[in-house]
Image (cartoon, rainbow, N blue to C red; front, side, top):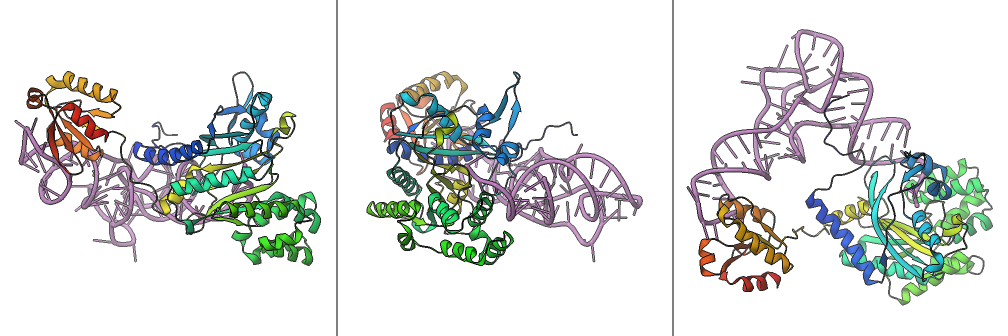
Length: 430
RNA sequence: GUGGGUAUAGCUCAAUUGGUUAGAGCAUUGGUUUGUGGAACCAAGGGUUACGGGUUCAAGUCCCGUUAUCCACCCCA
């Protein structure tokens, strides 16, 4: 082994330099401000949980291979959170009688999964979780749809580049149980194949179903199902709750004028705990981003793991990595500017205390102010401010102090005026 | 976990099918210009060629291993 420490971050993680942080914050601030606009409240949970919380809920695969877990010094089995939902369920179960329903909660936080990193997928990632709890009807879905579309509008995403694909687990249940009459084991395999339908292509898909020993008739039923439209659902609406709900959901969405939403029979969302509507959003304007930007759905038996009665819930997990890739693909990341508003150069170290006093005054007025700390050549000080994209430079030397004024320079236009400090503050703030 | 591609300066890439002291552009720092940035010119710093081993008179170049990264599979809460 080498003696020197590596400068690269741990596999699947990324260092975020200030420049990249501006991009991240653009995404997170958008998620957050739009959520607040809809009346969602922010909450948080610990990064670590008892491993049992994840084993109780998820399949073996997740707990055994993709979970970062360890034993703490007290012998407890601990895991770093790979998702938010179990923690959210715990929080709600713990105080259920004290919480006023419905809850509209969101969180933006880090998660860790032991995965093989590739485009759109890292071991460390940040995700927005936004959920509505306590609304059993489709108005929960519609609220989240409206939130999503508001965020996409805020991102200035072109309408033709994204699509929310919607399906219902109840509809899939109807297919598996009433039409195909599959065993539990085959349900899982066929479900996964359906999820991969678009990727596999029809031929490979049919080939795989044959391998599973499905009959000709069953395979045709599946293909017919995958081609079905909302119109087709009307024919089975009296037999399938899923079909009925989807018809109602799209009717209401139309009434609200919602766009970029489409019924897609191949959306599955794993096999874990979803109970009704399932949704995913995809980039449909390019081939760069094959992964879903977010996924989510309805999970009405959220609290069952704590032995409590049902609480209807609908929510999504929206990943930072796929979102950044999407925004980059369409050039939607705004030119990053510093948050600093004004730079104060320093001509002589004797003026240091004086300049600091001015800076303190500016900061008190809410103006983000950076000062020069060593009296280097003035040209280089301007160069520094210019490189950091600071919009204003307030020049104060002996001459200005004697005149009881300041030189305020606009770094974009180069324009410069001798004004009073008060006038300068006005200009910077406007 | 399985399979494949890649690895040379902070970034993008050169380096005669194994041959002297591994180069360039951009970026960084300084100077031309001691109170006026963006341009131009000049200069400087920056490399154990990812790491370890092997073949050879000679390895950035060929071989093996490790690590990282990208892509696909698996999975995707």
